[in-house]
Structure formats: C-alpha cells, structure tokens
Image (cartoon, rainbow, N blue to C red; front, side):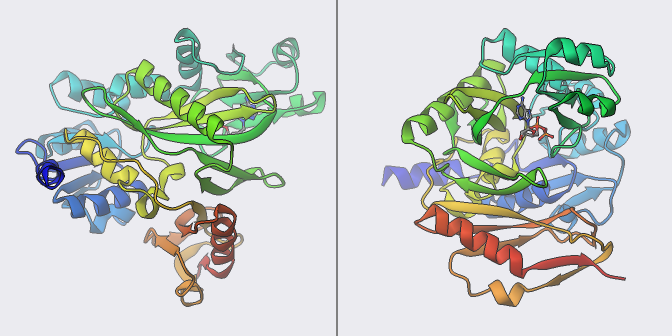
Length: 391
Ligand code: ADP
C-alpha cells in the first residue's frame, strides 16, 4: 500500500518542473517527449529543422540554430529545466545560461569536458579509472604515430560520432591517410566484447545502472549491427561492468542518464572507452524491456523526482533501421505489415521526412526469453522493413 502512495507522489509533477526544454528535437527528444506524455510533463525543443522528429510532440518548437543565444535564452525562460539530446550544442551559451541561474542537466561544464575526447581521456586517467593508453596528437604526424606504436586508434578530439572521426591504424600504409585535425592516439584494445552500461544519477547523487548492453559490430562494414541486453556474458563480468560504469559516472560527478561504453579485452579486463552524456542507442530497449525506460529516467532526474527501477523484465535485442543505400528524398517505408505479427517485435519510426543512405530512421526492439532468439528476430524484422528516399 505504501508503495502505491509513494509512486503517486513520485509521478506528480512538481510546481517547479513541468516543462523540460530539450536542445535538439531529434529521435531522442521524440522518445523523451513520448515518456513526458505518460508522466504528465511537457517538452519544448529548439532545432533548426522545422520538421525535426520531436516537433509534433513538443508544446513549442523554437526553430533556430543550436548556438543561437537569444533562442536558447527564450527556451530557458519558458521552461523549468534544460537538457540536451546531442553533445555538440552551443556549450558556451549554455554555460552563460547556467551562470544566469538557469538549471541545466547535464551541467554545461561537464559537457565541455566530455565533448572533447582528449579531455575526457585525461579525466578518466586522472580519476584512476581504467582506460587504454593514449597521447595527444595535435596534428597528423607519421613520426608521432610510429613513436606511439601500431596498432593504434586515431580519434579526432571533437566532432566525431558513430565511428566517424575514428580510424584504426594497423600498418604503416594506414599512416598515409591520417585524419586531419587535432586528435589523440589510443592503444588498440583487442576486444572480447564491447559493452555499454546506461547509468542514471540523480541530483542528490543516487546511482542506478541498467544491465549491460552488448554491442555487436559488422566486422566487414565496421558499423554497429545490433545490441543485446543483458550482454551474453558471465554474471561476474556484467556485475563488474555495472560497478565500473557506476563508479565512472559518480567520479565524474555527472547528473542525468549517461552511457558508459566499455571494452572487455581478450584478457577479460574492463576498460572505459568513452562516456556519452545523454540517453543513448544502447538503452532504447529499456522502453519495452525495463521497468523504467532510460527516457523516463532522464525526465525523472532532471525534474527532481526519485530514480525509477532499472530492472529488466525480458532479454532484448535492438537494431537500427537505416536509410537504404542509393536513395535520398522523401521517406518511403515498406514492409511494416510483414513484421506486424512477429511476436515480441516493436518497431519505432522516427518520422523523419527525408531518408538518405545510412540515416537513422528508426529502430526495432525484439523481446524473447532467449536473447539469441531476440537477436535473430530483430535482424529478421530489419530485413523485412525498407526505408528509402523516393522522388
Ligand atoms: P564514437 O564516439 O564515434 O562512437 P568511439 O571512440 O566509441 O567513437 O569508437 C568507435 C569504435 O571504434 C568503437 O566502438 C570500437 O569498435 C573502435 N575503437 C575505438 N577505440 C578503440 C580502441 N582503443 N581499441 C580498439 N577499438 C577501438
């Protein structure tokens, strides 16, 4: 009985925090908006694209560039708290708004630190968290790479995402095409698995993590193929991954939902690859598979509510739906009927008006008591759905 009254109290919007301003109105803002609707909250967004995915669900959409100080001020003034959907936003403007007293999670100073991969690695190192060896590479230099040693990974300090701005250097011939820009070099970690742990940390420092997600890459194309949660690894490793991710977020003093990407090396050592200061692809399955989705969790945190349970009820697999190669233009979707009766399969389309090759147009989550079955079904559903740009 007391649980019911506590839940009622938790889910009642507070006077201060009824509307959350989200910087960028993409698919993550759309899913935050969907969670907001069930929580009796509202969202406002700022996004330069008048047709951004979250536009239909937002109370108001301010159409403006992400570093437009006047537009950000307006968003801050008309909402109770600000949060972000991607990290490459106008951080200096957000720092100015925070200095004026506006509430922003994650803290813009934290964003400034995490958005730069070199600063992030230095922070991990200074905090004594396990991470691969690295050096700064201010400009492309064969000599510097050779001195560091091959194989290694070159990463642009800023601007890279989804594997862009990252390249593995295996042999001397790869040194002819170094990325042009301030970078860092990391020792190449031979991996048994790549994991991501979504961690929620509240304003008062309480921490809860979701079961680790296993990231499966297409080794030919070197792109993310699928995610499985919980990761198909021994319990002891999953527990250690959660503990390391929770410690990382607490040590960085981060507030909000973050994803901690981890490498499990071939000698079973866990290393922190990077921290993503927002809701994340690796937590999308939480919508159907967990008691509290990562989106509800983020809203609970930024509006000052208690953390929800991160318990996962069903093993899940998730695949992205990408725009088909070779076609760009107004979005056309085929195959939805074919998947509509597949058991445990949930299709999310982000309502993007135009499709282009490789653009994230949606995702599919499949639930099954057997994670291998969930993965097989998610891939099968992906094979049936085609999203292309049609003129
Ligand atoms: P992004 O922020 O673009 O996702 P990451 O730093 O996560 O970039 O790197 C993308 C991918 O490159 C990783 O998921 C991993 O497969 C590979 N990678 C990155 N760093 C290393 C490393 N030090 N050793 C081995 N593989 C790496």
